[in-house]
Image 1: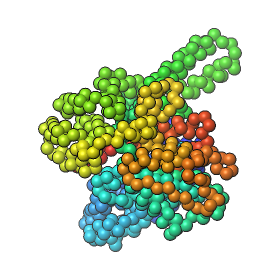
Image 2 (image 1 turned 60 degrees about the vertical axis):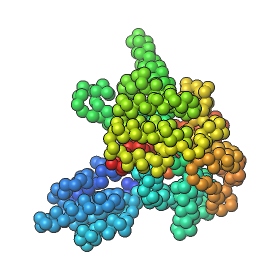
Image 3 (image 1 turned 90 degrees about the horizontal axis):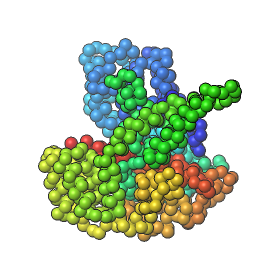
Image 4 (image 1 turned 45 degrees about the horizontal axis):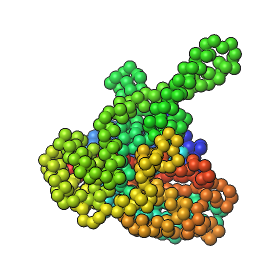
Length: 589
């Protein structure tokens, strides 16, 4: 099965976005004559694999290599670097060119920045005295379809840059990406934003429309509403352990660019030492059916499907009807998919069946409900003393701190001291960064978490994970705060929760754009249908990352009876609590 997702069922023509990205890349290669070596930034390799088969790039006279510190070894006369505009990458390329010159090797060098060149990068080339030896260009790749309803802006460090570094370049990138979408699908008439970064994106979007206007007279826009949310507005949700099938796969195996990598033995193959990539997207019909279900239910579904095939096999052995055999053979076509997910589910169960897994979930739920502070504190203390992974400890600690608006000074100082004793004093910078970002801090005010859980109905003790009627099934009782905000935005508007919004980080705003004929009332009426009777399309963008659990919650909302809208989800990247904290740990080293 191809790793490139099938986009034919997308509510928006995402094929056009992917086709344009493919064409732009192939055009770059066609404009450079002769044999060429395409050197790809490793951080871009995964993104490109979702756009184009690498075999298409290798056709003819193109050789592929990945960028590394070692000089490029190639017989090609043209070396083309396809890279993110990062200063360290510039220095690496400069050293490659200088190495070639010192050895008398004559080549033509090209650097294509993704998505755009920067003054800082050009300055490095000038300082290294190679600027005149390089032809510079841009490959304007602002977004990559991860699936038929998910677009990634591929900004891996957006949250860290916004929280810690004061680097707002990702905000411009997101605004530019949305503006490019508007140039294909019309100006989005309704915009609602919450959070510092998101409101800046909304304002930049208006500025881009003024500087580079999209024609608003070409009929009704295809996207009716844009909802922008900062990850910082809801950092509680990614700190919770995801319990949907797709979320659990990401937590335990790490989904990268629509695939997981596992030992071949997990998938039933004989080669123990080898790794296998297992694609995970809508092209797999069974995965599409089960990915957003609570994992407990997925196990039951897979059991039912395998039992059904066994029973039919027993019956078909005695049949004389060709039509019955034909029907059975059709069902056998789904066997590889069933086998794939039975193997993956069995592997996941080796983690989820452990008592320690359930104990962790119980503590999470206790923290979310603001119950039994002492038990939660002692659980985290014990994790530190057992020297469990620092990311695992911090994830629970950050959840504990966020819901309690920090920890009392005595508790904060004690846990801080214990972490440094157990994991080393080199983590002082890490703890300082977490405190600076408000993720693990001293308690200075009363928590507003109780007001938020009650006002937004975040805790649902009556959740039915097998037959859910609410998004709280996603975490077996906790409804993601971010998605509750989306629900209010599309049903009754945010005015009804104005006071609750003020309890969350950052400003919020509503904008009406385009011509009056294209604008729905934003005052509170929900907008299930657009004037021509189509289902309304809502673009929900997470600045700083979205979890698979939140994606599942939005899909669940869209599938509910009587809901007349579809979602497209945009994100700087797909995240979970571990990936967020790992980025902070690495940058604090």
